[in-house]
Image 1 (cartoon, chains in turn orange, cyan):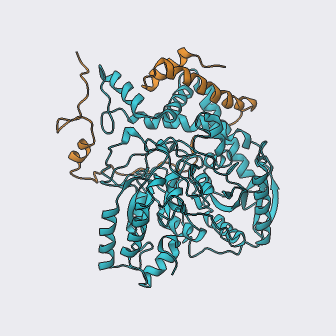
Image 2 (cartoon, one colour):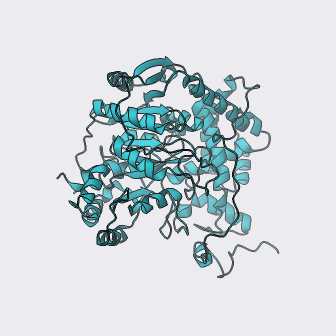
Image 3 (cartoon, one colour):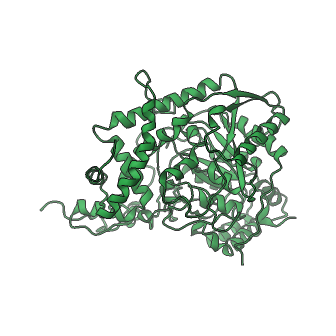
Length: 95
Length: 485
């Protein structure tokens, strides 16, 4: 199978990464050569194989939900590109 | 006494404990050498003056019972360090200052280590040559314009160049073992679940593991002992009995069964790698090990599996970089436009490529054909190892299909870059521990690594085999300090 420019544009939209036409062309080539390589997996019959979803054969442990770090609100907000001292600020969402 | 920076970790610790060296002398030696080594471009963030202050605090009130008493160490910039920039080699995290410490780095500070700085790496650990870093290429101390491997390329270069006595890297598909192999150093990827992933910038969560990198096997065992701990803050951390790897280290491996997988004899393998492997087999025999031919039939499918699983997990993990809570933000017409521009400008090409592959293989209509298929093949790959380990105690292979290549040589061809990880990737897919040790030099004088793969949680065994072989190999790196003016 091949990935065309339209699909590239669609993936870019799903990934929330804007891609201009020149970059899209380059990606088309790259992704096709990568998927050509990946297609190799189709040589294998896997109908009866259980998928491996987790390599660590443990059940997830519960722990109580306790606050461990205190008074780091300002430090956290300081990392944001824009804030009003209480909240993160983003471009206007509701018209 | 030999020059401080060329000493092993164990020698430095001994000298500090015997008061032949102070923490300040050691720290100053590494800082001075690092100041003269800017050309290698290993540091993203230097923390030299704080390191010197901390070494004085240590010397004023030394505690020699700690495992890393006053030892300065630089770590890969993928570990969150409280109050100190953590970039993951990316523009998008360029100005990120964590408010918490990764468990693995906390473990080394708790044992008396002192942070020297944060080391360059491929962006979000995606790369095999350290060329995808926003902060530029890293030079390999072995030769000019040679890649140091990746993604822990700053770590391997700093280590081989004597800018840190040991270091910590992370390994998702070979990112500790391949750079170790390219720089003539030792690197170990622990069993999945051994070292906590808490506070490590996530790439592919079912594959990522932190691990030690060092100049010899003894140092490797000591650092592993410090960083491998059960951690409730990582839901996949495994609570098993960990050894005192360094005190239980032995070169007596008589009767150990070591498997040689025929499928690793790939097409186009260079003669030098083949010779290295044969030599490795002879060394193992000399150590008293029994060599057994084995088969890992799905080896040839590991890389394709990896390039579905890892990007799929990455596309999900990297969704958090949206220009809102931290990092770089680009201006957009509206919220969505801001997200799209931020991610387009904030991520480098390789990272975008992988996010897009991951998004595609997880998208509706393609999930079964790619992602589910890959998870099934991953199971087959793990079964291969389970089957092999009924007959053998460990597996010996080359670490990489070639020695280090030149900067720029493979950047235009992603698939040829990916092929670098052909011998290391199966180990991550199966969650196993593996160590790379220097096995010799090729005709150009570049190091080549041998990989020893173990059963899950059997780090002690591969460390012992590596330790025994290291003695026989008696490897010497050829480094001329060409970058120091």
